[in-house]
Length: 259
Ligand SMILES: [Zn+2]
Image 1 (tube, helix red, strand yellow):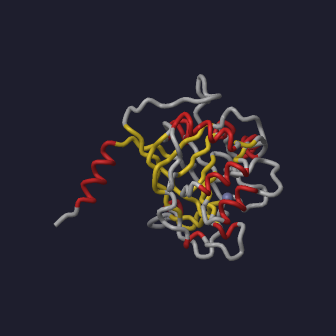
Image 2: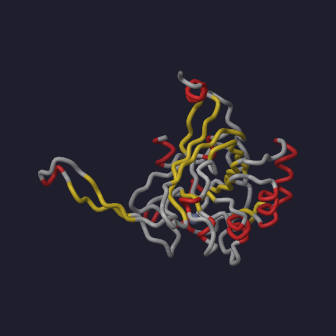
Image 3: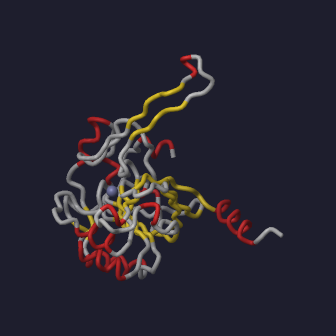
């Protein structure tokens, strides 16, 4: 007999609007300055009379939208294939942090203010910090602004999130620690507690405060991270919550137009 799980999932998918939170992997996309860039080499192609086409890909583990594993900062930490497959499945909580100035950090006080407005965070939540960084995204030379001055999460807030036992913490910037941070408090505290970090998310401005998030990374042996496809399920035609710094809305990036 067919179990209940199938009809429950079908009902959920039919009721949901899906927002794609991952960037497209493509040449020229911005990566951390010391990391490998994305490349694709055509190996077989119809153009040479072959029956099919395929390419060899080359990229760093932290390319595009990706999930950091504890091993990224801890020699004996879990690698990406050991991270719980449920880490990026659960209630998504979008936190507006677009009001911060470049290089600033989102503090515990701001987080407590958020909870006063929207209710307490829960164990298992997937935190999505929205700094409005997709406005700076671009390919090649156009990525310059994306690669510097991003705001991040403060150490006091990171400590609070790990005490809350959230499942995962994400950002739309290149790193969860603010640009210029030398001791990477978020990476040390969260990865140290076994909580993976999502970086380079996109389309967070399309989300209401709460959504249902599903993300599955690749299963790379000994990986410090992996590109990840993340989607958020929201109510169809739900009224979008627009926060600070979003009046008028940012111009659409390539990914948003296609999503
Ligand atoms: Zn990373």
